[in-house]
Image (cartoon, rainbow, N blue to C red; front, side):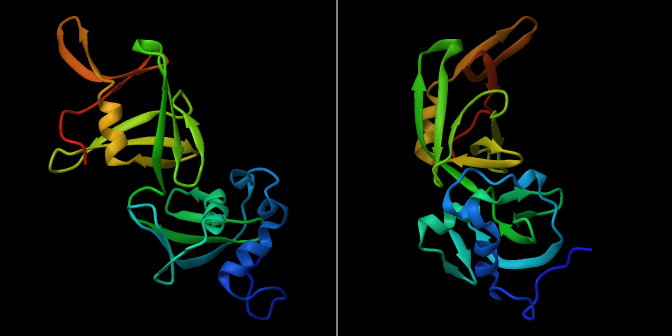
Length: 200
C-alpha cells in the first residue's frame, strides 16, 4: 500500500519541497499534470489557504512568487470533501475561502446570441465560455450578484467586480410564452440567467 512520506523518507521533508519535487517534469512546464488520473494517498492538510481575493498563503504568509502559485494551481483538484493539491505520490488538503481562481480579463467577440466570451484568470488560464466552461450566477443574502466561470473539473473562477459590470452589460431580457421575461446573457447560443441585484 502506498504511504505518505515522512521525515525518514529520502527527499525533501518540508511540504512545499515535497510537492515541487514530486511534480518532476510537470514543474518544468511540459504540459498540464493529469491530476484527475492520480489517486495517491491523502497525507493530511497543509497550512495553505486561497483567500477570496485570489491570494495564496502558506503558513499565514502570502506566496510572493507567481510561478510557484501557478505551479500549485496546476495540481489543484476539488475532491468531494475538500480541495487538494495532488502529485503522483501524495495528496494534501488546502483551504479555499470562496473559489480558487479569479477571472481578471475578458474578451468578447461578436454580439447577440452567438457572441463568444473568453476570460483570463489570475493564474493565466485562458477559458472560453461554453458547454465545458459554463457561467453561473449566485446571489448572496444581500442580493448581490457574483458570477463564476468553470475553469476545469469542479474548479471555478469568480469574476472581479469590474468584469461583473462589463459582463452584465451584455445581458438582455428573454421572453418566454406564459412566463415572465428573464434577464440573462447569451453566449454561443446558450442563455445564462442572471438574478437581479448589484454586483458583489
